[in-house]
Length: 176
Image 1 (cartoon, rainbow, N blue to C red):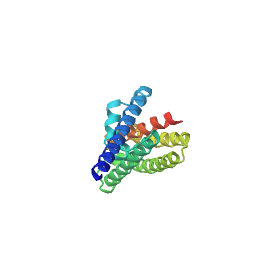
Image 2 (cartoon, rainbow, N blue to C red):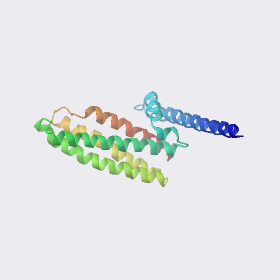
Image 3 (cartoon, rainbow, N blue to C red):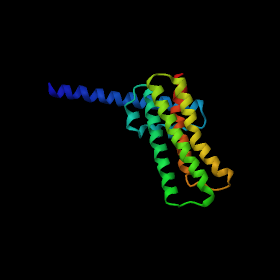
């Protein structure tokens, strides 16, 4: 009897994982079809690496999981820029854009948290607006360096963050 119970639980868990995998692949396929900047393979790889995404049962849960990942990434990037500034490891002309980036990341984290709250209340229009606002942080940060004709020390991280925010934004637009 105990063996039968374990067997049933195993198949239920396996089915749940298969459902999440199918959700991830289908959602990435739709997002990539609607937005050429989203690469299907990268989308699938990113979401399958996220434990929260692996248990998602619907698109709203994928928005939550991918937004949480973006919050973590932006928080980490803010810490990186703060460390650069505190360590005085920057070219003098890049101090102002780095300080601007800190503020942009603070605002962006707030926007991502607003997006999470709106997903929970199923207000997907607000989710989309908040994610769009958060997406401005990495692009505006980079613009500050470009305008001064200086190389950004966090260009790769900002590009990755931008890509990371694109996923929940694309998914939230599918929910509107």
